[in-house]
Length: 459
Image 1: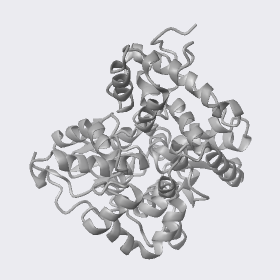
Image 2 (image 1 turned 60 degrees about the horizontal axis):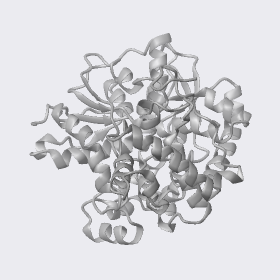
Image 3 (image 1 turned 180 degrees about the vertical axis):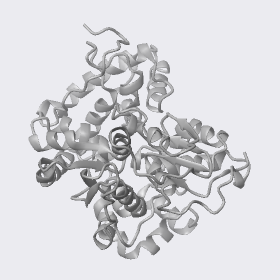
């Protein structure tokens, strides 16, 4: 029998989303009450996100101060506050499997949302925001107009967007580009350096929806870094990994994406190519979430085994062959946020390890949830909570006096910078933009220019 707080690695069970009982409201309610009662007696997760304070306040303010006096209809705000960051499962909960209590709080919240999705209870506007492929394709031809309309300073359009779609008027939103990462890779493929120590490696660079549509420059820089290090990488993007749909509980759609993408990439995986994901959330999907949804799909298993996060892959090159020469120091300290979905991959702080390969690297590493949570954090009802959860990260970034704010998650990077804006007493204390570790490594390789002025900002 596993003991509370044991040193055994947590294990996750396959998600039985194809079983009818998974969607039974009575069975779901019984499991919610079982888990919530255990959480109520433990409370180790009180400071991770807003789900747990909401749950504990709900119980404490009931007539009996116990769960039996709480109406099941009042559980929804607890579920809605979960960002599926996985940190309670990975870092806090003493009752995760193999413990006999068998707690997996994030996947229980996922089940609740799956039941909602099955019942058609997910709002239409929320579903439209998660259609990243469609939205990216529609926005690309009018990228300038789309970015003007979604800019934080546009009071007219952002007020309308809040009324119509529920997106908070002050939330930083991703930008769109007229030329996707896929298009750029076809037009200009970087030459592979045959003199690099890692020459001979072959990989697929999975663009991800964010890098393909919203930050193709960073994706192109990742391609250039790999080529400089001798890696023959081919950019691929069959479709979005389905993380946005996972957040909404649309598990059938996620599974369908997993089947199709894994099957399409299988021949190249069998040919020995590694698969490199450019965003930690997408790497997590390919490595862990897809196999839990489709444990018997051989294509999914093969893809999961071949997949690496970008920083994980670069660190592996450094460890086994050595990086290509040419790295130069960055002109300042980096406040680096370790993304929750990178931590959930259970691979260590690979983003920090990668940046420490840069000579004279000066890092202030922050390992705490940024509060953004994908599409969750931009919504009107969540944005203030997202900023509150991320405030300790923003405060640490501000106190580090770093000219560079970076996160492995590009959405989190902008969210943290926005948090720094709110805390800073002077505009000079706020770096003009946020970065990903990919961009900083590219800067060290002189593949992108360093900021003209990168002196330590005034606190």
